[in-house]
Image (cartoon, rainbow, N blue to C red; front, side, top):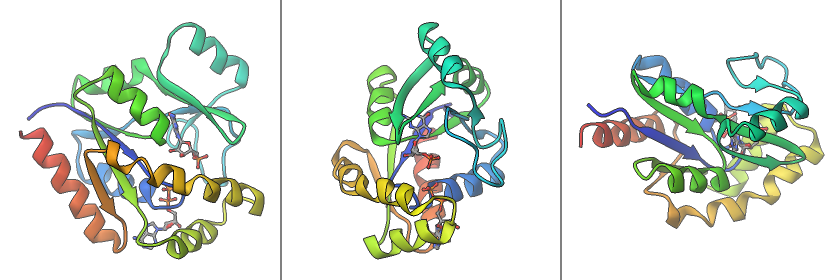
Amino acid sequence: MKNLLFVISGPSGVGKGTLVRLLTQEDDTLSLSISCTTRAPRIAEREGIDYFFVTKETFRETIAQNGFLEYDEHFGNYYGTPKSFVEEKLKTGSVILEIDVVGALKVKEACKDAVLIMVCPPDLKTLERRLGGRKTESEEQRGERLARVQYELGKQDQYQYVVVNDDLQTAKRALQAIIDKERNA
Ligand code: ADP
Ligand code: 5GP
C-alpha cells in the first residue's frame, strides 16, 4: 500500500471536516494534516487538533523559513500547510490535507502524486443551511464564504475526483473507496 497525499477541498460548510473526521477515526494509517492559521479559534476548536493557531508574526516567520508546503490568505487571515508535519506523517501513512482550491492546485504543482478530491453540496440551499446550522460564523462571515462557492465549484474539472455530500455515510464510503483504490493502485 502506498503512502499518498490526498487533498480534499470544497466550499465552506459542505462537510469536509465532518467527513475527514469520520475517515481518520477509522483508519490508523490515514491522518489529517493540521494547518496553521492566524484566525481566532471557534468555540470547541482545539489547538493542535483543529489548527495550530498562530500570530501573523509567527506565520510570516514560517513563510520566510520556507516552512509551508503552501499557504494562502482567506477572509483576512493566513492559512498554511506545515511542510515538516506532512513529511513526518507521510513516513508512516497517508495524509489528508483539507484546504481550499488555490492551495490544492499549489500542492498538485509541488507534489505530482497528490490526489485531489472535491466535495460538493447536493445544492446551494443545502450548503447555506449547513453553514448556517453550524452557527460558528457571523452573518458577514457566512456571506464571505458563500460568495466564494461558485468560484470553488468552478474548479471541479481540475480535480481527479468529485464527491457529492448528500447523505453523509454514502459520501464517506465514496471517499473511502477512492482512497483505497489510489493507495492500492
Ligand atoms: P466544512 O468542514 O466543509 O466547512 P463541516 O464539516 O463543518 O463543513 O460541516 C458543516 C455542517 O454541516 C456541520 O454542522 C455538519 O454537521 C453538517 N453536515 C456535514 N455533512 C452533512 C450531511 N451529509 N448531511 C447533513 N449535515 C451535514
Ligand atoms: P475555516 O476558517 O472555515 O476553517 O477555513 C477557511 C478556508 O481555509 C477553507 O476554505 C479551508 O479549506 C481553507 N484552509 C484551511 N487550511 C488551509 C491551508 O492550510 N491552506 C490553504 N490554502 N487553505 C486552508
